Amino acid sequence: MPLSSEIIKERLRMTFGSESQEVVAGKLNMSQGNVSKLLSGSQLPALDTLYSISEKYGVSVDWLLGISKQKKIQSADNLSSYSVAAEVITYIVQRGAKAQDDGSNKSISLEIGDPLLKALIKKSLVLSQTDSELYADWKKTKLSLFDDKALIWVGTWCSEQMSFLASEASTEADWLEVWKAAQKAENDYAEMMSDCVGPFGRG
Image 1 (cartoon, rainbow, N blue to C red):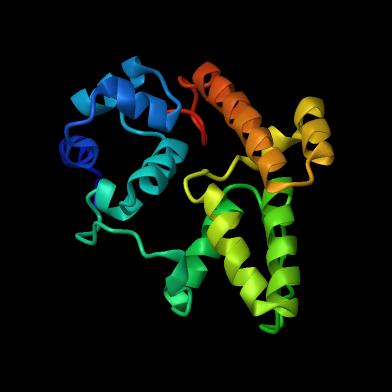
Image 2 (cartoon, rainbow, N blue to C red):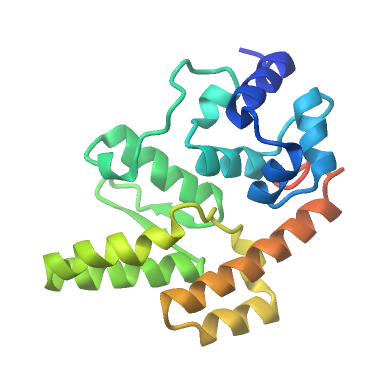
């Protein structure tokens, strides 16, 4: 089914509601001019923008694109569903992780290059396997700090500056600062590449 710019424009307006373009731009780390283009339908949202809108406003990407009538995204607490688990892993791979099938239907290995995601997964696994109450408390007080933090494109982490910042981070507060720096670097690159075809462009 071909995408309709009119549907996308209308659903973006429904999503942002009465918020000003300045407020939306601040939430999505983009310029007010780009928000205006999205709302007027003169520019379709890039893939990373769609995922950012989805995460900030709790709406599904399929609904934004007019593919689905299901507006709300499923929460991470509902990972008992195979469909949700598959979507989460696919999204991580789309953002730069490497998945390799051994060809025997026995296993698929996932190589995660995102240092922030790796740090959170490591801590999550350690706590969940040692103390369930401590793990629940960490999820509520620390992991929740990243609820509205979009995944960073894996290539962003390859710069010397980001590699250094990531190597120095140890606490969740450190990682929040690292994420801000990585998000800024990604947004700067996306702005520079906005006319190109690809994950950061409009094509």
